[in-house]
Amino acid sequence: MARYTGSVCHLCRRCGDKLMLKGSRCYTPKCAMERRRRPTGQRFRRRRVSDRGLQLAEKQKARYTYGVLEKQFRRTFAQAERQPGVTGDNLIALLERRLDNVVYRLGFADSRNQARQIVLHGHIVLSGRRTNIPSCLVKEGDTISWREGSTKTEYFKQVAGEIGSKSVPSWLGLDRDNLVGQVISMPTPEDAGVKFEGQSIVEYYSR
Image (cartoon, rainbow, N blue to C red; front, side):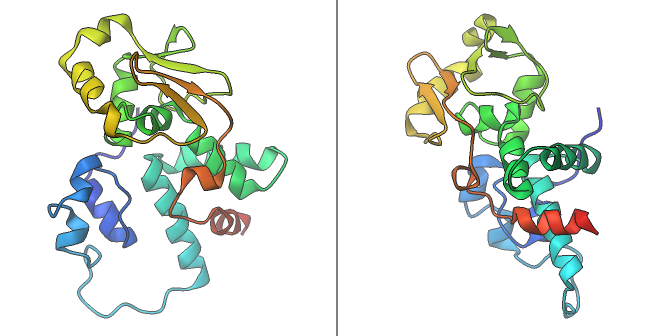
């Protein structure tokens, strides 16, 4: 399965914004954006960016945030186009409904990359079925819990000890005692709190 294996800190510097790709490290002085805010490879004065360039930057920012490669991102956009409503909002909702993102939003992982690994290793149970597909879309009423064998690991004990200090978005519910999450409603762009514009991505793919 293809995936990005380079430095995620370079992605933040390339976008010129913190995308919170390394979890708690992004809140410390060790964050690359705190030490070197200049984009990677920049040695001279930057030229004015065209409208097309700004749209591309927004699309790349969305891809980097959710850890999705171009081919899969394009398929997700096509799915958003087929749905009724505003395509940009549909796209954000589909990205938020990814299982790896939900695991991250529930506080089971410090970053989406870590959440993806947790799902791939089979630690997560979705509505009673063990699921190892990070891109699987959750729906209203679904429950997200840990596999029984995974509750005996040191990582699970660490998550259980730190879960009390983590916040959960309003479209998700969390039983902090048993570490079981539930999808209460479908996410909205306001719930996602993303740092990119869905409309710019629509305009980019419309050309």
